[in-house]
Image (cartoon, rainbow over all chains, first blue to last red; front, side, top):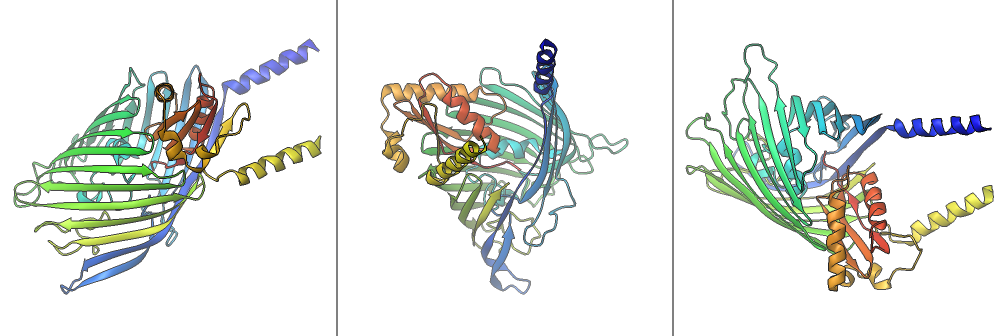
Amino acid sequence: MKKFAGLGLLIVSSAAFSQSSVTLYGRLDAGVQYLSNVAGADGRRSALWSADSGDDGASAFGVYGTEDIGGGYKVNFKLLDYLLVTNGLSATPFWNNAWVGMSGPFGSFRMGRDDSILKDGNFDYDPFSQQHAGLASLVRGANWPNFSNTFSYYTPTFGGFDAGFQYSLSGVPGQFNSARADGVQLSYRLGAFSARTVYQEVRDPNGKYSDLYTAQKQLFAAAAFVGGAFKVQVSYTYMAAPDAPLGGPRYADFGWLGLTHTASPFLRVTAAAYHIHQRDGQGSATLLDLGQTYNLSKRTSLYATVGYLINGKNTNFSAVEQPETSAWNPAPGHNQLGFYAGVMHYF
Amino acid sequence: MRKTIVALLLAASLQTMVTAPVAQAQSASGAALPDDAVAHPNRYFRKQSPEDKQLTRSVRRQIAKLKGVDVSDVSVSSRNGLVRLTGTVQRADESQQLGQAVQGMTGVNAVINSLTIRTRM
């Protein structure tokens, strides 16, 4: 009898020792989108209605795993693919996150393809939680890239402070700086107040900062107050691409201010203003965003957002984040109204 | 035995249907929540005494120290030992972990967990 009790204990302790799990998870976001004032090839302006996936947040499917190896140490991995529910295709050829790493008393470390440190860092400070019309619209996605060949380390918290470091190796022989990226982050939290700063460098294949929106240096600083029913978020980013050609945007100041009101357990309303100033007369633009999410359950919500993008004389930003060459951009100096509504389901 | 389990399951599922789909109250003692706290939470939790404010601050400080939970977008309010959590967390298990942790804190009688999920992807 005693033997059995001992055996039972052994089994219990080994179960507690090796708690491992693999979780399938993701989210699906589908809706309808409207954009006004889209520039046509023949100089005509037209409206665009489209079915959309990922306006509220990229639809994605992933696997997250963790293995407890004892002593407070864990081995973790993540695979995540962005997909389009509109046509069932992968947004880019497979796994936008693919990393393996360890966490423990030292913090956490991971290696592989990862979110940029800036993308993970600005999420908590974006009033629209990285929606399609929001923090990336005025910088053409410069603040949410993913990087390959990346090593990331996050410290534990010391007296409210924590730090993060990221480094992406080029993998090109003899060209250490080719397409190299690196970043550092410092965060502070005291009760409902938090602040963060991130410095990130992204180089082009020649090791230069040659494009304000694809290969540049960015210094991001943000603060947030998460009160009972109200949340306030503010940020400023300095962007620099000193090697970019003269006559185009090379330096910019970018920032936002947002207010979120939890009107009821079901309803959240958010208003925000985003503004960019491209230095040396390269033009300024402003995005005014108003949105709401209505929770049907803990995992499913309905959303609707209106974004009005006011372009300066020389800019042609779209209300929803688009590259410079996109067919959805308005003509330079013209404004654009964007609207989308849909459903977001987490699983 | 099986009947008891079925009855328990039925009772549990009925309860989740009756309570609001988002706000899930966790009360260790099983005490009923004030009607106002459920029907008009913003109004109810706006009226905080100095003691309530102290509990709110204490809960905020303690959840910030929890391991494995991102509380960047979690807001706390409280009244008469009833604590309300609103905002978003990254994963469903974080919401559960937070609710349970707050339930166990000194001075907390019950928790209204209105957290929803918003994952950074």
